Length: 219
Image (cartoon, rainbow, N blue to C red):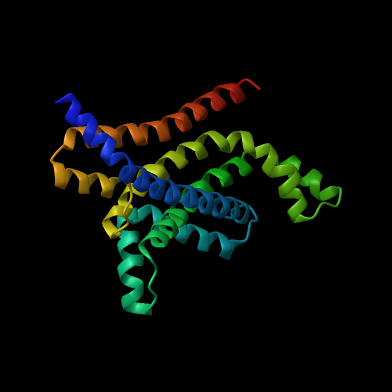
């Protein structure tokens, strides 16, 4: 029994590795776009522009109110029907994860920036710093400590949520696992491998978040 399980695992590893690479690629690109979009969102949300704040609030509420799975279906199936725009399933997953993640990261960045003493902004402006210099050299570096731990936790959510991509046809590690189970009926072994994969990817991020939070709380 043990030898057959080992043999199955050995034969399945190349396929699982290929699926895992797909999952990691979607997650990494989603995290990249979420970070860049989130920083932009956070900065724009602190400029004090009324119409801009309304637009950002609408964007935030849309992604909070509508589940990620529904967004995946809307983008993957809706765009070709209504706008004749076809996006490959891989990039559809990256786009949705990036947009959803940007709304979450953006709120973290906004909160971190608004928690800084107002005197920091006023001091930067008084010495003639431009808006880009003020945020790039004064405000964002100071907010980094406050926004890093919760942002890392959001990264783990993006990685776990990437598993929904299987529902629009992405052959990720979940899909590969399902295909192996359908062929071999070894569900316990394959699900154990999938559990181990996500644990090994997500746990170090969660641990790093807790460590940074404790360290920076005393600094």
